[in-house]
Amino acid sequence: MDIELVAASAAITLALVFYTVGVFSERKSGSLRRSHLACFWCGLVFDTTGTALMTNMAAGGQAAGFGIHGISGMLAIALMLVHATWATWVYVRGSGRARTAFHRFSTVVWLVWLVPYVIGMLVGIPLFHLQSVCAVGTSLVVVAAIAAGLAFSSRRKGARRA
Image (cartoon, rainbow, N blue to C red; front, side):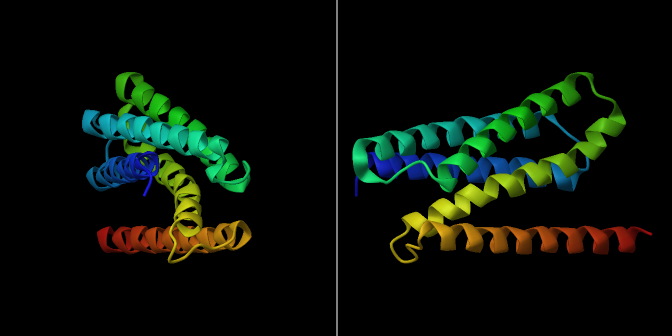
């Protein structure tokens, strides 16, 4: 296995870990904290690093084209940048209400980010190795199922509190 592929995969997986920890610890705590900001920014740095490495590999002829995976990946990075920047602003200058409600936006950004992650996994892992169109459809189904599970979980928790 190519060392550049290993480094890129490790970086993107670290992005998944940091971003997931940041989003769900913020969601659980009910308020935006400094540790969440650190996770968001680390996730962004690792995702950007991994994406740059993958893009470099694709340009070197090891992968074909800049299709939906590349476009959705760039959109996810842009959204992560907006998210981390807004999180920093909310933490520094936002109201208590804004800090409490911010987790809804975090969850949406995490779900959008998950789409290109799952596409890359489905296309890149030899066991799956789906074609791009199948990978996109499958990733949308997977992410929609996760979103439904999160919505159901939130409603159950809300019903228990009432």
